[in-house]
Length: 337
Ligand SMILES: NC(=O)c1ccc[n+]([C@@H]2O[C@H](COP(=O)([O-])OP(=O)(O)OC[C@H]3O[C@@H](n4cnc5c(N)ncnc54)[C@H](O)[C@@H]3O)[C@@H](O)[C@H]2O)c1
Ligand SMILES: O=C(O)[C@H](O)COP(=O)(O)O
Image (tube, rainbow, N blue to C red; front, side):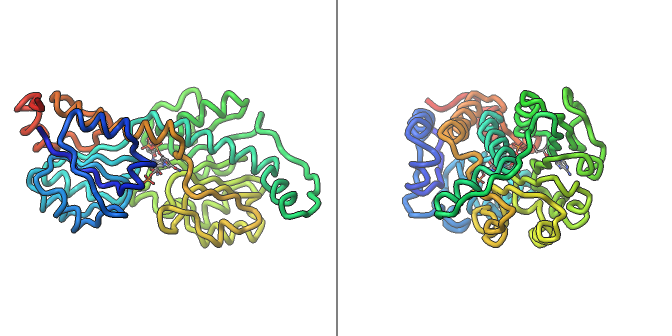
């Protein structure tokens, strides 16, 4: 039987992995659990996962090259999330280790959060709630409807596609910028980021966090947006220059902003931006629904199951380099009895 190390702390296991996934995993493998209060550091993970073929882990900690170099029996690292920007993928590939991430089923939860954020920005719902709770008389303000407005989506991957469907269903005109997606139908394509920014009433950042997208939303990007437009980030903090965003809000170059992520620890929005009167913010909860959490956890069970059957798992990122997986599982065939 293969050995799997689950790096979630006991509390994280309860909230972000769940009994159903854990028992599914136990049916496939000898599961070794992290007993500490927090996910193990890379060094601790190396010690704890010796002899394991698979590690399942959440966003933290980062997974540097030494993890892959120091675990000769490791064949796969399964990330219980989408973002893999803090995993050294090149090192994983160099050592023949397969890296997987969550497959698309968690997307509706994040897309729905974005729709909620757009409605709140345009109708001031949370402003009114805040006034009533603070005992202030709320002043009615003119809102804006989504139908007929232009939704600009930067990054047409899993979540971007779900969001586009919701936007179209609401009667929005949806324009997409993604240099790596050839087919954006039924949306309109913007060949450049600037072209998207110039025409959108809501600009939503859903591009992957890679070195090329660091600070994609900077002074120039905010200056290219319409002053009545809103900016929403539900992707990763690294894509936004926070100081530039603050400058744009303060200078009236943006009507509002919604942030579910940022550069504070655990991808939280910056406290300064979160407290800004033009900003609505939430603590990285876009994918935090029982449905999305269960989906991502069960993905890892399906991934381990697929590998044991000698199949390529969904969400595999570097299958061409996954030599250990191919040798140990594919070539050896299903061997988990
Ligand atoms: N807020 C949350 O709780 C939450 C939950 C899940 C995922 N996320 C994050 O949301 C983001 C999107 O997730 P996804 O599942 O749709 O990812 P995905 O990998 O399916 O899509 C990302 C898209 O970004 C595109 N892209 C890359 N470089 C680009 C660029 N320069 N300009 C425009 N597009 C570019 C890629 O081509 C891809 O289509 C990720 O960063 C992910 O980590 C956030
Ligand atoms: O990228 C993701 O999947 C979500 O933002 C959740 O990521 P996390 O588990 O890394 O916070």
